[in-house]
Image (cartoon, rainbow, N blue to C red; front, side, top):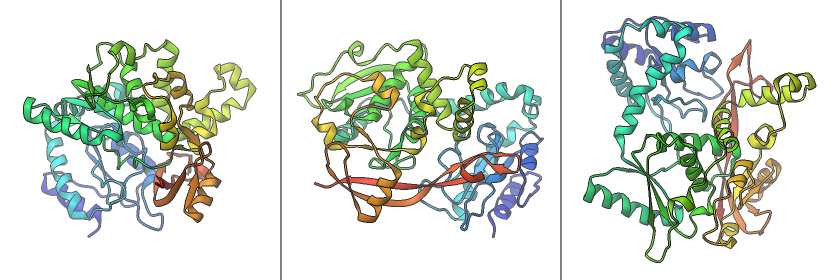
Length: 411
């Protein structure tokens, strides 16, 4: 049975009146999102290039009355605050694994029908999104108590802390395992890093407490820099309670004042800008085009910005473990290095160098020449919304495949 037919049967069993639209258009999906009922969107990607993404709209990601359903893993930027019903990368699920989850979601939505007037009007879109996110954010806050930030070199100490906190204090700790978003050894562009950090920021915001498991190498990672910067960028009222814990007895942890930077207004704006634009590749392309036009630069006050450079989206970065080990321990947070994408030990790579490395199976760090073994995996997808009759991606694409590379240090 096709997924659409199975979903229709599940909805009918829950008491819904069902209308199945095979191969929907963008206008049909848009109208349904702002119509009377609940929308279930089949986001499955079937080879060769069979999907419904040409009809997709951002309303699917942020409306409480829209459910994204997929047998395949989703594009990395096709996620809103509402949890989709889809497998993690690189899995693929059968209909049976999806339908029971869908049935429960539809039953949860029944008491919220009929839709309020704001749900059927663009005028009330902002309030509607806020209202839709309230129960989601509350559920996130209730799912755990503490967000734990730590270096991967101290995973065992982190897990021990998780177990002890639950057993002795009844506190639930969230530690980010990002395999669905990225592998620890995946070679990523700055755009992908900021996109993942955007999700991490949401988890920190939902926590009651923010714990830092301090070690001498804590600030040797882009990710721990990002978690501290995310915490620093929050307003005083929104910040969870901070606690710094030593990973080992020999560590000497900094004070909160020493660890957490006081960001300038410009630095806060830069973080907000990165969080906003990292998930909108089509917007970056349009702003770049405007930047090339003198009149647009003058009228809009556009200035050159690292986030508008093509390298932000296209150039992969190697986070070299050997370079990190050669840096002085206990060095301070590098705010500007992080915000400009020049944080050590990040080493820029060209797409050509990675393609050559895939053929040979190895890659040398551009700075220290450390040898890495290069492997690849199924591609990750990016969604580019439809404008007019075509997508806003390269060559008018709606779905863009981006190769996945992993770099493992040879010992």
